[in-house]
Amino acid sequence: MHVLFLHSNFPAQFGQIASHLARYDGYRCTFLNEQRSGRHSDIDCVKFVTSGGATSANHFCAATFENQIRRSAAAYDAMQRHIRDPASAWTDIDLIVAHSGFVSPLFLAELFPKTPVVGYFEYFYHRFDSDFDFRVDLPRESSMSAMRLRARNAMLLLDLNHCTAGYCPTEFQRSRFPPEYQSKLTTIFDGVDMDFWQRDSSVDRSCVGGVDIPTGHHVITYVSRGFESMRGGDLFLRVADQICRRREDVTFIVVGEDRVAYGGDSRFTDGKSFRDWAIETHQIDTSRIHFVDRLSASELTQVFSASDLHLYWTVPFVLSWSLVNAMACGCAIIASDTEPVREMIRDGENGWLVNFFDVEGWIVAIDELLNDPARRQTAGQMARKFVNPPLSLTNCLAQMKQLYSAVIGG
Image 1 (cartoon, rainbow, N blue to C red):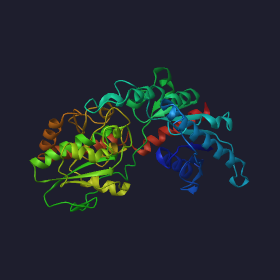
Image 2: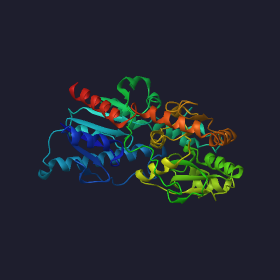
Image 3: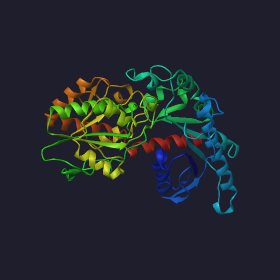
Image 4: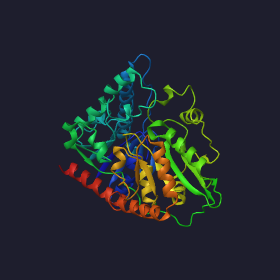
């Protein structure tokens, strides 16, 4: 059996399933991507290079589609060259698995017209009641950005129509897609390696993530790939600042890069990073708020293992892996009471939910829970039980294999 995975990044969402299929099930797995070539962990990687992109000659609302077309065409070109190369020892493809939204498998149908396609669909954009208009406390997006949003799903719709079947990582994300396509979509989480993401009681709490922790201090953690409004970065800073002013026994550790991964925060930050803008705007004292940039997965498990309380914000958008990884590590978690989070956190059982914007509510909850280690421990244990087995890698891989087999057989 030969499966072709398509994603602009490597290993991204497909690395675990591809490695498992190749190592334990005897599949041949090829991974078409923009980062790696050669053989990696039993996977044959084929690299494509995208040239050009949207320019001022393109309409602003068409830029996303233009870039996706170019990336997808580049993937087609790379694969066409690869299968013609005698050294590749090429065999027919039995299944294509592609991350729609990053790079479309649409053009690969010219090379493999009879091969079924499984699409991985993360998010369908909406103009209202969505991530786009949720942050009512910040300057509004331009009317042109709103218009672009209406056109942003163009390639997703093509892929929904073209694919044999598809899946989404959470029920919330699946619910965002048009009803007429939802019968094609199932919900399968990406999977958490429970042997890797677990609490390590031997962690040295005197130094966490490179930060020296004073004796007797509580460690409060916040993790986000980018520091931005979509993940409530500014609200976190306001809460952390007030907690530090009220208590002398807390140290905050912030993991993530000082950049915006999603959204258009630069429209109102006057050339500053969103983090610097938030610190300056809200006059945040960062003396006990430590920014440690990006960490490796193993380093992040150490941070979670030392965490007394983990804080997570998100607007209605794609759920962060970091939340579920923190749950797997048995963290006591306070999270924003938003739709994607409610799928994971049961208020008062495996964590606590607070209104996204309610700064004082967050402060009260943090203050109470820091004084109640028994409640934190119980909630952390329940969080791990919630993840294992339903969201465990073992369980999710089995569901993916079942979907793949059904599509190939069907």
